[in-house]
Image 1 (cartoon, rainbow over the protein chains, first blue to last red):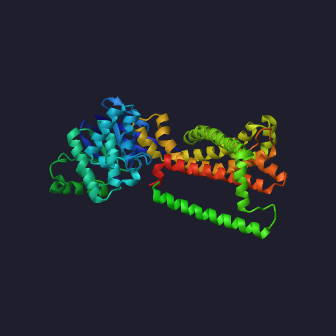
Image 2: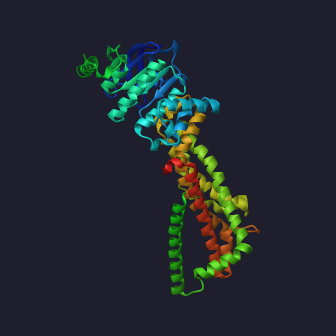
Length: 247
Length: 254
């Protein structure tokens, strides 16, 4: 379970800048939450704090009752770009997490093949990232995090550079995967449909300093054919309304 | 490299070699002086001399270049990557580098020879100190430019600092380091020639010594055999670096 209380983050460069203030929410184990808001509202900052890559200046962040720390092994972080190393093939990129953890090579190979098969990219294993499409690259990044059997997925606009159809395909893959494994998921996005499709709870942020403006419950997420239901469109409209008018 | 591509490369090079030889022959005929012998005589002498004195001189020179490049490369790359990644070390080192980098190190030749003698050590050290700085600066600048999100994403997989260097910083800098090495190779050979002409301690002095000696005896064809030897040495080392880059940076050639 993820519990965030009164979180505050200040960047201290030449001028100090308050990026997040008074952010509180909880995410029950195995649930998903989407974070949406304007550029510069601190969405990515929040994710970096949760990943243990950035220190917070106030408040509390608890993951399964423990204060957040760098290199928590069960946390997976997926970024929009640069998650993959250009000098490693798809297979080498997928096995990077296991390699860093010193997993024996037999076991590593098996886990990597399993994850790459699951995401349909095993046949591209010898390609370098430059030889893969955007969608395939993001599948490699997801496969890499799957090999580590994480219980918390953090995703920073993972599909934002993909075309609409590829993006929907990956959203479906992600949903199927979540329904099978029930890991907790925090998804930062600027795409309203994506937030409604993948978030059981939608947190709408406002900027400078970033804080939660509104929370929309979206319990129907994951239902068969949700993307084409009336309710889905209503939720999207509701989210858009809050973002535009602030209520 | 597929065979057809190899043949094409070979024919491209043959044409280039032919053009150079024709220009050389033309210049030699036009000048018609003993101090510019034509390519035929020069290559003939080169072939004869290689089995006599030129061979060992060539080996000595090649050894000096290779040893100084390798021994400069390793510490320069390691130190450069650390300086590029850790700002507090760079803050100490940067002013030192900025002040010393533009000083032409060749100016220390008399001092180096006085300190280290006329043998291999002084020559290798002189090349070393020049190449070391060139590669150090390149490696540091390359390490500074490594994409931060790439580092973050590997950190989030649980990587320690050493693994960040191994999986991210080093491969990211590698193509630039190889480019620096190629440029340094030219510098190294130039410095080598210079240092070999200035001082020698018995035995085989290297190509620089060989060329200067031939010059002193006015044996022009022998001098040109030495020039050919140095040219071939540079070319072969250059080809090797080319091959090495394709071998260890395959992602750069997709």
